[in-house]
Image (cartoon, rainbow, N blue to C red; front, side, top):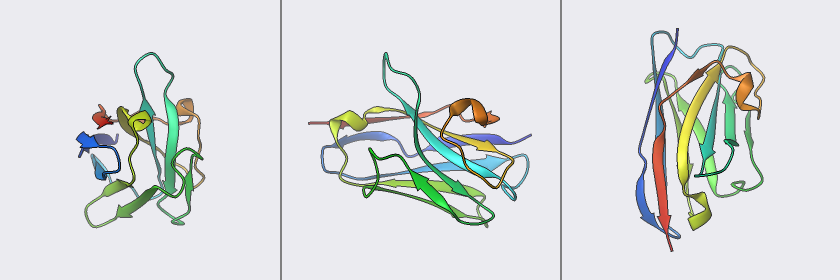
Length: 124
């Protein structure tokens, strides 16, 4: 069983940057794909990015492409989401999730384990 803990959220002005972390415990991330999702009040949870930890393949939602970078540190069993040029519409609770597969997915239901989320608020 994988336990995921997100951190790094906070309040930032538009145009600023944040780096979110997703630390795994319980077992290593070997063989997993890890995704980042976000959910704004009154909206459905939406895909942000994912990374296959076996192949290093990454994929981004169009809304964040060019502004975000997902990466991993196997020694720390942690996945990161670097977010730059933040906009007020990026405000949401950000969640990381994992699934035991090499191929990523953009649908939340395809993921097995979830963290508790970290709040990102971007002021205009």
